[in-house]
Length: 399
Ligand SMILES: [Zn+2]
Image (cartoon, rainbow, N blue to C red; front, side, top):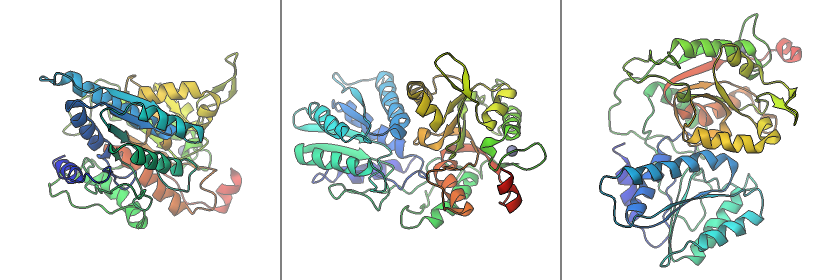
């Protein structure tokens, strides 16, 4: 944590452009913390802070930032006489009309020529429909507001809009070394899009906890991927129980804090993850994924955030994403990685799966690397990996 002020002060010296703080995508823990610190600084100076979410996969991070800013303000023992307020904006930049709406709403918030904006998980890549619209938003604000202060994070350094100034954060702030080693291969392979880590200069307190490995292999296991497999769900649940999750205690070494269900993310990239899908009469029309059923068999309270859930009950998923962002309910979150970008948990279980829209033509190695970048990097303390046996003709035709 001691490294962040350096980055903050160096960005603040630049006043000719709206400073952009960025770090190189999902692997870099700590970037959201930096946005919270910067937002807190603005609030104490009396400025209102606009936290802007332009896509559903930024909802959780934005909600968390707004929540933490609100808490920081109320907890300050010596608050300023007139602190600013936090305003949370939700848009869907898959719709062009929302860009104009965002510009209009944000310009209405300009005070004394100044506007303070935080944008987490700000993808500007033209490989998505909404990336160029993020670029357009930033450009239009930069043109219209001379006193624009805009900090964005979670940006690929190959896609930064020209009006913004990059400020890379490459120091891993909270990883245990054992977790970092799991992410590192993906960083090495993704050179060109993501920066490599630098040395924090601060010795890690220890190597961290040994990564726990389960295997989607054996008679009771079904399906090509663990996300389809009820037995994997049961074994994950049993392992979490042995760690003390939900028992009021913790068996994590050197950790007196009990592990709650809310401390756990079970993350997949599978587009097939879902809870029971029900019709208007409450009848189940499509059963939950195998892993979800297995967790339920073992009595774990879960919140499932999958693409199918989003398609069938968007209001429920939006509500639960907000809930997860502030850890409001004591449940294990079983989720596609899109919904928890920018969040972290002490315990992360990586459940490999297949995304039918993006993984076609990708090698198993590439899928594994993306899992490490997007999911393993959510973990601060105890990582659990479910390993998948290599594909053979026999298993692929059997599923
Ligand atoms: Zn399995």
